[in-house]
Image 1 (cartoon, helix red, strand yellow):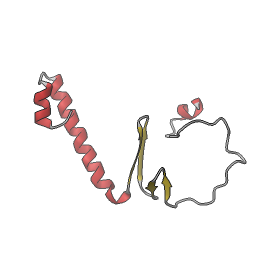
Image 2 (tube, helix red, strand yellow; image 1 turned 120 degrees about the vertical axis):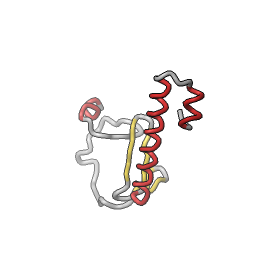
Image 3 (tube, one colour; image 1 turned 90 degrees about the horizontal axis):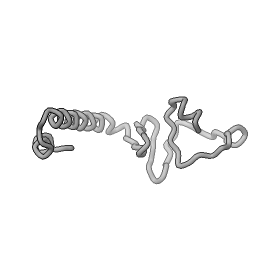
Length: 99
């Protein structure tokens, strides 16, 4: 596990198993839709993850979602800048509608 973390390669799992995969797996296909925990993931979908979880964004709505994320990020940055500049949190919330 430490070697995986040190590699910087984005790997997410529900747990760790000390086995390697040599001789234990067989790739039967790739580039096909799959379902993971009830979520359909298709080739080309955006998959983003961190220590809190994983999010799958279907390719068909990727541009819309990225625009919404950029707007939220801008608003949160504006909020933080305002509070650091002395604005009360309640006023900043009323102004930017986010925390």
